[in-house]
Length: 70
Image 1 (cartoon, helix red, strand yellow):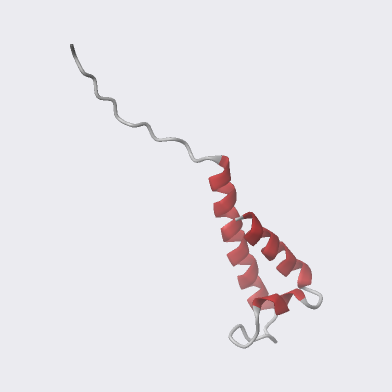
Image 2 (spheres, rainbow, N blue to C red; image 1 turned 90 degrees about the horizontal axis):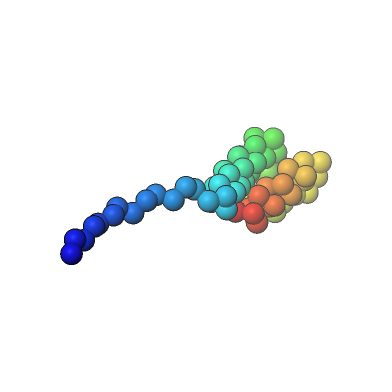
């Protein structure tokens, strides 16, 4: 009787892993972009949701959707 030992195979990255990672990166990038665009709001003195107010609010909405997807 012989025993054979097989090494575990690496599974490819699942689609949900790619979505989570790319959404996290998109969130950070969008918030960093908002910090550059809205220089009137100091990041330490205002909550993140205040970036959703005003003409650039759609960018913060996209950032919140990316955070939810991640």
